[in-house]
Image (cartoon, rainbow, N blue to C red; front, top):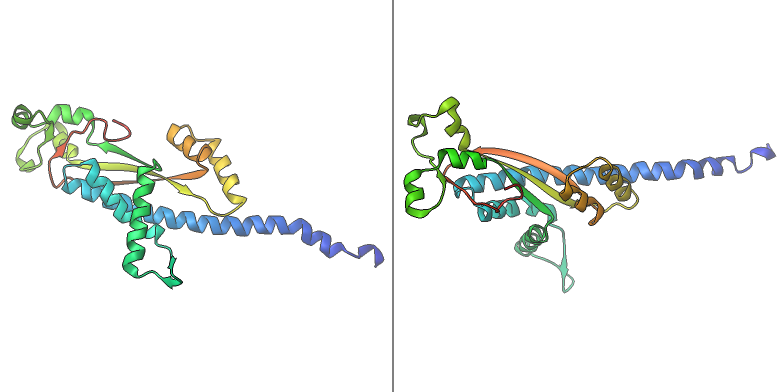
Length: 221
């Protein structure tokens, strides 16, 4: 029996790091799931806003900021008193906007493509303003091969957000694992330089206004 003295303590010391890693990992993945769910909603809001305002970058960013704001709505204190709801929302909105301005959000316009603008732009509008604009009215009467014009009136966005990981130990493991397999330069910078995890969401909505070409406004064009 004397030889077994301290055996349970030894077993505990061996198992404890593994248990802590599993617990911390579960906590971190709950935060990731919450962020992904909010990002899905924010991407939808960004696409919806863009569909209403000519697929403009500013409208898309505003919609995204509104949608992602709940992710940053944390309780803060001023003069030992909780902020009012309005103050919390405004603070969260400002933080969300700073995330966009600081380059932690990549917005790609997947559709309409540059070739779609070149193929379907309204010649009269271009002659008058020099702007390539895809017609959005009377689509059922406008003919195009294989319904390509109708497809060009679908706004599809892909948004990548660099999420900050807050659980110790697990953050390094996750970023190192994802960094070893990603090939995207934005995601690599997100993981390596910033220590953040890139999460991606997409949304597609039919345009409710004519899409206007904006070269250089999005990450991929």
